[in-house]
Amino acid sequence: MLTGGAIIRQARLRAGLSQAELAERSGKDRAQIARWERDGVMPGFETLVELVRACGFDLSLELVPRTEVDPGALDETQRLTPNERLDRMLGLRAPGTRAPRGR
Image (cartoon, one colour):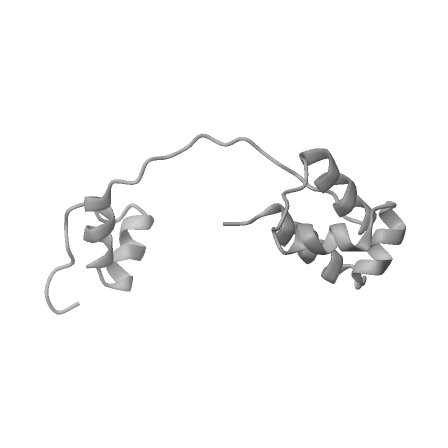
């Protein structure tokens, strides 16, 4: 699971900043940045966005419909060969069917 601390750390490292440099850019205390990065304390959403922006990035969130995965279908798919999975993905084979022997 991606945490607020991991997002801050990733943004800071991608920007090539030390915790002290991020603290200076954002006006936050370096020790507090370290606590957030260790997930000792969770930053608020607005603080998270502010820190990511101080690193030169934007944080984009999007709501997407949740899809439920049928565990039985997942087990079935795992038993397929890579070619069978590709055929199914391309719509060449219906779920629940396998390739003829010899392929």
